[in-house]
Image 1 (spheres, one colour):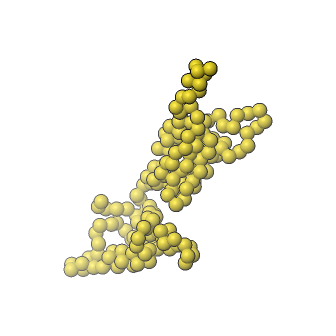
Image 2 (tube, helix red, strand yellow):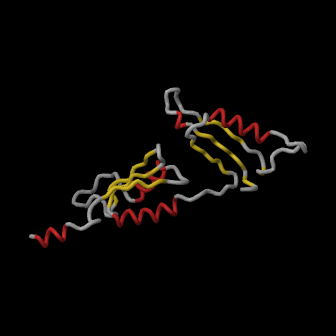
Image 3 (cartoon, rainbow, N blue to C red):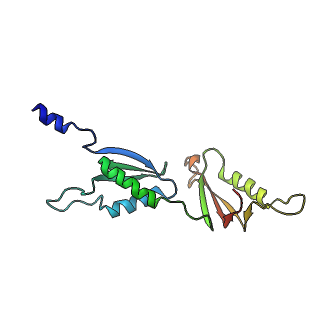
Length: 163
């Protein structure tokens, strides 16, 4: 009996939970792709195990743009490899960047940045930091009672000339 308990009492043998941040993609889109790829969330066919991949569930947390993953450690490591390939930085050519704001007002910051970009220097020229036209807009929370932490700044730029 002791030998059976020792065989069953092995770390990593069961299901665990991880929270994995998504850096460039939207966590909701990433979770949907992964769930479709591994057929998660569908009831198993009669007489079949719940998931042959070892993944139990993959859910998106929109607030932190993270994935909540349950499954075996082996399946989690395979998922990380897949995420490395899916969660990649897009080309900065013609990119639209959505930046979540923690403290500033989206409207105020958009106005200040737009004024800075359109300001002319002593030589009569504008800013030479960027190529092409840059558009900055405020994406404010959907309702007045929404958390101000949901405010975002959207920046559309054809490309950065200097870093």
